[in-house]
Image 1 (cartoon, rainbow over the protein chains, first blue to last red):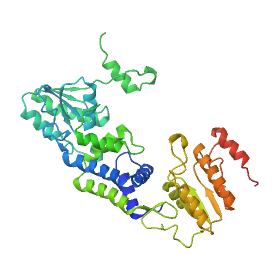
Image 2: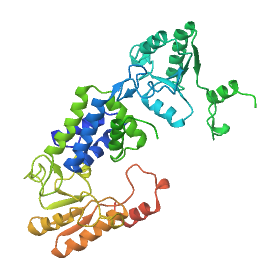
Image 3: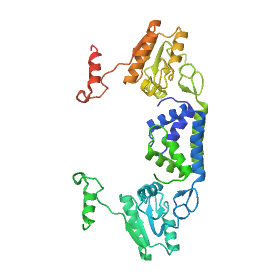
Image 4: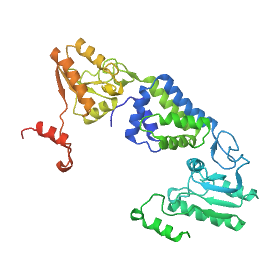
Length: 200
Length: 200
């Protein structure tokens, strides 16, 4: 272990605890921060504190927002009869970038992973259920969790909970991505593409 | 471009300006920070501010330190006749981890890259020259800049400046890394290994 001063070592440890930042990156970031001017450091820390202080979870869709309800939930031009359930706020950003979806969202902030000790109550599933039961407007729930074992399990669980109330529960299509080569496709994706084939 | 609130967008921009953090990582980090508790955010920002406030450049070797002169420069058990010139503080950490070098260091904080507009005065080369001319103790300068065109150019430049004063200027050996396969070695490395071959 290299010898750094305690304050630098503490900074490296803190940076290394962030997601996607390994030991080497943490050192690189720490020394970059040390070489910044006092003003740049103040800008960085105040950006962190300001964003954290001003951001709350929307009481309706649970997405991060600076106003509650968030701009999407309070937009009367959007289709309030469809709710797209996603794992993270970044997924909302991806959907919005596409400009094809005009409904609302529900952000789970995680996924049901019993093996990692994450239960249905650690994600915002209870909030989704109470939201659906208190609104007569919602007709369809699109479960847009990732195409993983956990994502599929969560989708199935939501479907079983919600379907009896008469709300339609759908899942994004699984198939070959655009521009992909069948030769390099994995078996599961190809099987899903075959099952979900459409008439042209 | 995805729509985020101004404070979140500002945080993403600030994080994205750090080295090695791309757009996607910046978003991921920002949303991780938003999900932290107030205490964790305070810990992170105070780690940044504390490390930045307590760290200065050692007036002798220019390495980051919390005491001036740094523990290495003020250690009388070390060999004060050899100075190892490195590009960054991280390189010092790598040398120290090796436990084979007992001399002193000089941190350039960069490298001579005229194409990127970085001149000899943007790195701590003037400080190295004045340090060498004011000390009668130093007998050897090991130039341990990276094995790149810029690293080699800087080494050559240092050698031309320093050699006339009678101080020996050396460069780390270039050759095949331990555990490497000759089959996969590049031509330059193999040529250097051949030129620098030693008698066994």
